[in-house]
Image (cartoon, rainbow, N blue to C red):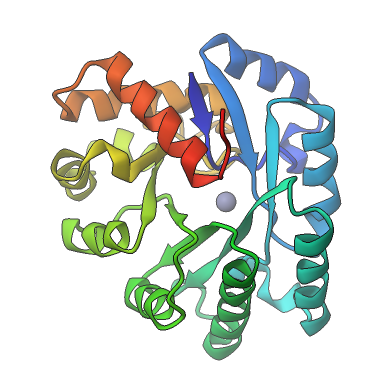
Length: 257
Ligand SMILES: [Zn+2]
């Protein structure tokens, strides 16, 4: 069984054929899907989808990409959700820092990230982290807050050293389409040198297409290509790898089975 720990099935890209997409994924063994929140505008939809589909779960958060939409009051709403829907809301995310988004105010990005990390700590929820070019700031914030509720670095593509820093802090690394790319030497070194307990799988669908599929929408069913790429780099059997990653995903989101 496979857990797609990061897919945006609520996005418009799936409005026409969401049921078919879910069925296609189920046919290749994808048994669970985590739908992250990105701004208050999509919270209702991820909640609804998780209520409608037994295999869909949700997280709520304020993504740095939508920084200019976020308001102070959204943090209060997030806290209310943590209080009200604590057993259904499996993580705070996706949240983080994106150094690529030059048009966004860096201080404001950090503020929203830090406040959400604090809330996750207060309510003991794992975090789904979006990090581009800001690994050091994230690591420092996690240390500073003594954040021990766990989480995942979504679409990880950093070095072995950065990977180890995260794993030492109790965070997992989300492996996605980057591992299928021919030029992913750095990430392959990471998946070779860290224990299996460090990883979970994800697609980030409809974004981040797999190798050779840049002209089409990404879908959770393609997650098997990430698993295949991982198996090429590891000595363990495919069954053992899949089972370990499934268990890692459950423990990441505090699910018993
Ligand atoms: Zn995402």
